[in-house]
Length: 85
Image (tube, rainbow, N blue to C red; front, top):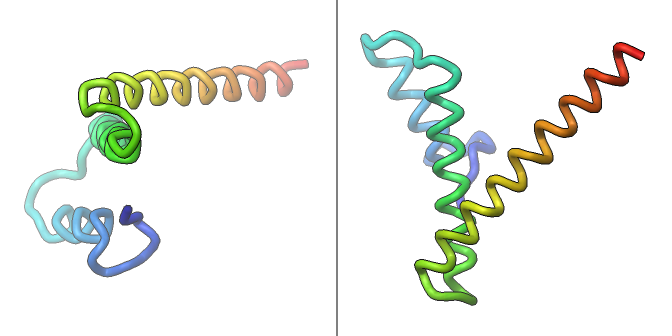
């Protein structure tokens, strides 16, 4: 699994180069977040396919991402609540 850890051939590096060199405006944060989320779900599904059939792996990957989303939201709310108190 490749990451955006600064490798020249990583998907993140090549994507960044495309955006820097294009005449298109910078994408909205939500567009980037959606692409990132879809990539993570695909990676999770690829890993799960080693132990379960492909349709089940996709469903499980979606569930894992929902759990991660929920944990992120809960952590953000807990942090905001702690600042208010």
